[in-house]
Length: 316
Length: 94
Ligand SMILES: [Fe+2]
Ligand SMILES: [Fe+2]
Image (cartoon, rainbow over all chains, first blue to last red; front, side, top):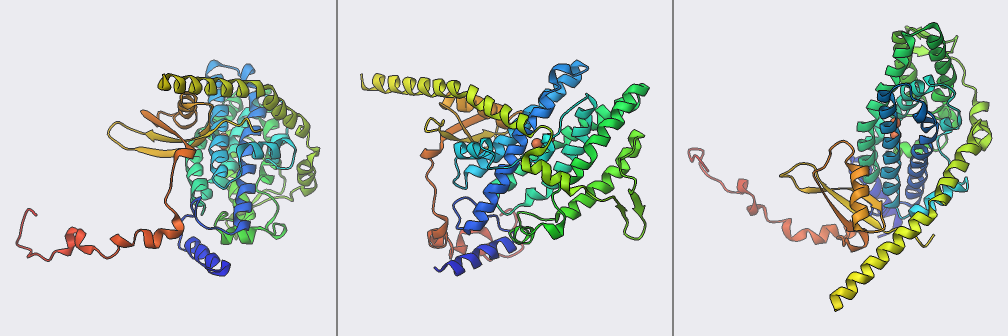
């Protein structure tokens, strides 16, 4: 069969909403795009543990601490679901980690911002996980089977992440003057980076059309961003707080909120590695990997020894 | 890098009485570790009552490219289905 025939069969399947599975024929570019998107997503889950882990030992109550540990543990799980789904495309875990550690692969820029106060745990849950959910729900129908299945599992778990975050902010918003200030300050710092999580504007996002045709993207960046702004602009009222955007205003004609211009210079600058925490995050990942090397080696040596001994016993 | 732990496929029985179902994969040094990791990765919310792990290299799969010819023998045997048989409506309990 010619490549054109195979490509036609492949696209017909996608158009009919039939999932592509690991051993099915797929175009190289589809495979490459998926490996990039899925591993970037996996790396984000893993690096995303760092800003929140920063507050585990200083959580204000035992309930908050247990919750935060459970959330961070979930993010580790999300990373693992996605790494294992990526591996079905033929790229090994060691290669994926190498790409992260050498800076060749990216992760979501949002995790290059620091977590300065306890209120940041609330703002991250509400806004960062909220934006992630908006991105991820459509991916549960992505054309690549292992990816879609991993996303279903992830989305089920994400909803508590957002709710616990909002609860933290709600508690602060009903607290003392200092707590209310802390709440507003965290929202102010996390709002714009969260809005940027949806990526460049549609006209500056050249690969989107192809990804839409392959159904590994179902809505455009700007569509999802608009949805996020609309939802958040209402939710913030319950907190009695404001979003740091003087241009945010309900547009009756469009039935959407208008919002201010995004600082894309900042966005690209953080992606290029100049965010407040890029260096720190990457160093923490590399250190964890290197410090754990002896554990991985010892476990492997032990497993090999046990299996050698059991073979010996069988022979004897 | 060559020291990478082998890959294991994880199957989980979500509830007594149901089949084990493929959940995903993970790396582990041996079967015991694979089971413990599977518990932490795939059953954090009581999604399982039993876990099977199989090293991925032991899984053999049919070839999707040959699906058409491979499943062909079952393709023209509608008489294997109960609806193939034309029986009067008065016939009850069958
Ligand atoms: Fe997550
Ligand atoms: Fe999350």
